[in-house]
Length: 616
Image (tube, rainbow, N blue to C red; front, top):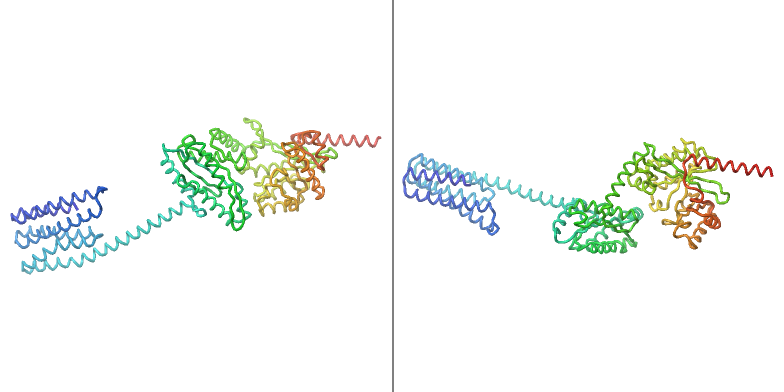
């Protein structure tokens, strides 16, 4: 616009100077003033001051445009009417017509302005040419008049293209905004999902900076998978939605809630202090634990919670998320339904855990793992009836690593399948050299049972070891059957048909159910050590042991008392009806060569007794 205004003003000044006519000098001065006004107004509009409305800016632009076009048209018409130098006429007429044509394209988005300027700049020239009376002037008027329909077609075409483009851009922007909302929202609960939390959390922290603390709660629902599997995904989704609504209402106005993963929620909320965060955590658990009714069923849930607090536990979203996750891991490690605040020591524990995890993957290839065998004794004869195979790990630098440390790590990182298969193979090879009436027992992890081809792997291991299937006992815990999985049923059925025996381990420590005993082919039940030598030992536990033993006698199932440490406990469990015993009183877990030596000594002692009987 500025270049066009300056060009036309210079052309008008040149014509006025060549003709030396006062009218042209006056019109040129007026044109120059309008040009300066338009340039200043456009500069002001580009800066976009907040105190000036867009409507006012457009009005001043429209008035300036029309005034400039009219004055320019009058200068060109005056040049025609006053019959000045022909080249001067060509100069000003070409500038005026060129300006009129150019401005149509420039203002095509505002057709009224475009046609208004074209009309104001060209109409005076047409009128002057017609009054001039010559043939050439008439044809000049005609050719200029033909510009109107031509430019109308061009402007209309450009306007439609611009309008369609803007509408398409608006639709695209609306669709993009809608897609962004969908991408940031969990479809089940309507809460923010992980990407939504990643966007929202930094904003929450920025708003709170220096004003109040932000507590980040990472919540994991306990046993949600059981609800999902046993009652269906529709019920599971309803449970998630209900809990999400409750949490959102709880922190409304002071925080945000997101469904981070399958059964995990993350809550970021403003708190005044650490005790305030602890109080809010209790309220969160209260909302989760509050019973809900879904499709006519009463459902109760619980959760574990990890908490990280600004600024002590971090000031960025990544720090808080990482530390809350560590706190949640600690809460789940010490037991369900726990709340834990982040502590710096957790980082050291995590580093140690990662080190053990990395070393565990190499332990098998380095032959650092060994198998020890703990005897299970016949309480009537005192003879060894079975050995339980237990994994032991002696690291060259870290020393002996306890099973209760590396077994959970192996389960979490997936190494438990390889570890379990190796343990079964080693135990089968050792047992193959024992007397035929002595069995070997191996604990199985639920992850190992669910692994594809796990049953075939066990059968292959005992076949390669030359161990008859009936001499292998696989010990499983009650928690395995909380998941009604067809994989578990197929695993047990396939191995039972082959002759492998199953034992129910740690009976009474979990969610005991007589339904499991009647449904699955258990040949042995192992009463948890807590009833024999733990804190629960006493008159009530003795009664429970007696009841279990009587049930075993009726069903033809052997009952093993675990954790026997004294002669008194031997007498008690034997009197209660237990047939087998296991514990430090009979011996700790020993390497395979010592286990073989114990069996050899037992055979020798038995042979000596038989010889004395024959001699007597």
